[in-house]
Length: 458
Ligand code: BES
Ligand code: MN
Ligand code: MN
Image (cartoon, helix red, strand yellow):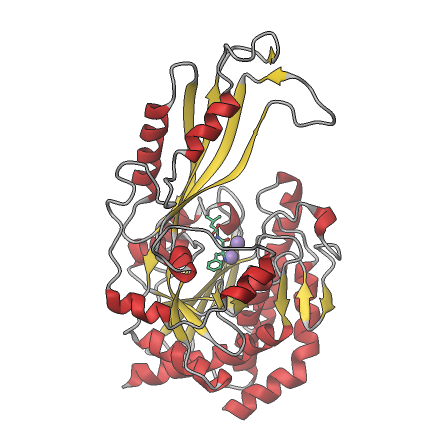
């Protein structure tokens, strides 16, 4: 089977790439209503390609937001079923001027495809469609497969809970397979066995009823931007530990054995700093970089604004200040509880001279995926077959809200078989995806299907 897979990929790779490029050209930015026509067009493109590859019962299912694509191939009801999840929407490409080549005109440089969504998640979704085509064409599909590709992941998957609930029978499967994460390096494959959750809030601090002359009033009236900055900075202590009372209460302790395993993960701090042009890393005292991004919760400001930000200088004491704040969560923190804890704290520390409003945005729950399951074993064997190395279990720092939701609604666990790299610049200008990674993914997925079917027989 190995040879057959390899030669199919080799013989069709130019077409695979050109089809992916067509998908990348569609600016399916879910956050910006200006692109709503494009998001729908991307859904149609994906649905058509799934159909062409041989999926049955293809449907572009409407939701309150963007549609979910469903398709399936039931080979035999007695065989195990794999549900493939991914997303066809992408993050906004702003700031456009920082892209070396336009975000929606995919370009190859140094073996990498540069485009918004190249890795997150169009490139990785497309690997599954082509791996499915490969298995259909070479008669090697020995599992049932269902596809569920959504268009609102980058804006919090808020309509997906209802969709999953209403379609729980149709979505029934033995495992959920997701390629929307990264591995350590191309010569060091890994599988994420956990993802962080997310609590995202927006805060509004109001001082005087109008913008004031900063000379006439400055010094006597609270400046909401100054106050907001102080409140934000007080959220961390000198050890970069979060000071909000109760914030760490639910955090599941990671055993010394697990920490020792994490410490074994090859990680080049010098390379990491070089890639980001930073002189030093910074984070919670007592934890390594891998731990800080994998097993520890965080609080970060994503955006802050208020007052005058135009050309030149305007002397103004602003009436209002705003910030968007995200907290990454680890098992067993709850996004709802953390949002509440944050909101209570922020209001309690605000001086009387201002009023504070906290509005929660979307959230997502942290997850751990099993490492002793048949699915994990199959994924591990698949990587070993195509990379020649056993993948290392790691923790992903990002969030995929649907993973916890699937578990809650359907009782099904996921396997996170991601082929990206952290250096692919997800959500940043010049996002990329290695052609090696794209093709390796197409090659590895059929081996997962094979081993999953085999292991389920025993
Ligand atoms: N694919 C990412 C999540 C990810 C990336 C996990 C790399 C692990 C490693 C996903 O598309 C994403 O960006 N999720 C959002 C969450 C969402 C609620 C907006 C995130 O993590 O910020
Ligand atoms: Mn993604
Ligand atoms: Mn993303």
